[in-house]
Image 1 (cartoon, rainbow, N blue to C red):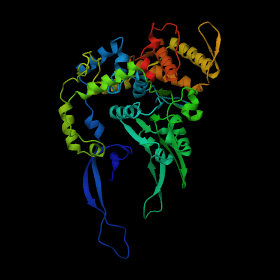
Image 2 (image 1 turned 30 degrees about the vertical axis):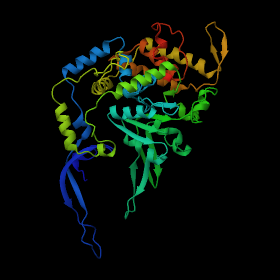
Image 3 (image 1 turned 120 degrees about the vertical axis):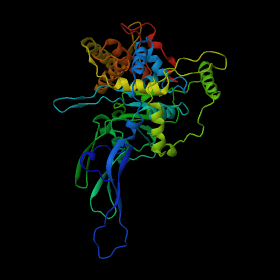
Length: 463
């Protein structure tokens, strides 16, 4: 496809587009002999992104419903429950992924410093805990998502590669998965199976959010402003409770510090949790889903754009998106919890991403106090118990300055989910602090100013 004039640089590598143009053949370069074959090209006259064609517009009823949901006192729990509702439990993991979908606020300072607003999440846990299904749900709900696996990815495949066209002398740059996921999410499954050298290649892309290539006489910097969602198994296949968290994960501190949230997803064997999972699976098994012949995988990606446009035209009718999902009672007759529909959740997250709140003076003071508290709790091998005595603890994950930035990003994301346009308040900082501690398998303890019982909500998050 040849793009000229204002059509140049309209889209970036990895975008799905609809191109209208003129099909022409071009004469090959002159040679002593010819085979009579002329290469054909498409001269573009119009380029339109498929995502823009399929994006459902907001109507006034949608905005009113979004504000009503945000005004509820349990809005954050409702949104987390609606995230991957087919997976039972893991409430805290869903809350972290929900914040990752919204993200913080990106800052480019006057002196050239870039502070990322994207949140990186790592899920480490036993097999058969639903980690890959959560990655699939993120891919389904994110506007731009690129999926890859650790075993099938190399360092240059994730960042950028230099390739030479057959019959040409010059090298060309091929964008990797993280560059193609710019302003989106990259999902890396089986992260622990990736080679050490390949893992080092994504260090720069995760923190500086750009990829620098200096090869074959070319020095290029590419943007890779994406959130990283990675899933991995523990070092010894399953989680060993006798060992500390850092040894179970088995990843270097230089890489772990780049993840804002590191979740341990456990397969705990208790009767209550097993009954909940069985009830959830049985409730799904009794539903008859429409469109059983739906395309999946490669067929879905390469389905004709005409069919997708017809579906989008039907959804473009000026009707508000349905808010709550219709659910059936469980096998024992108990009522199912309230869950938002996927389409409404997608619109809610789109609405939240537009907001850019800033930290208030009280919130800044609270962030500093919470960071010092985490630094004292995690960097030393001691913890202050309820009686004021120091108790010996196992070694924990390192707390660095990146953790301070993570608290700010998570607090900003929580404020966006509550539709706070102007300021991030102390309640958002407390929610971010609680989420960071629970991700590291710690009890927040008594938090000044927090609602009673708030620290223990969603106790099944570490299943």
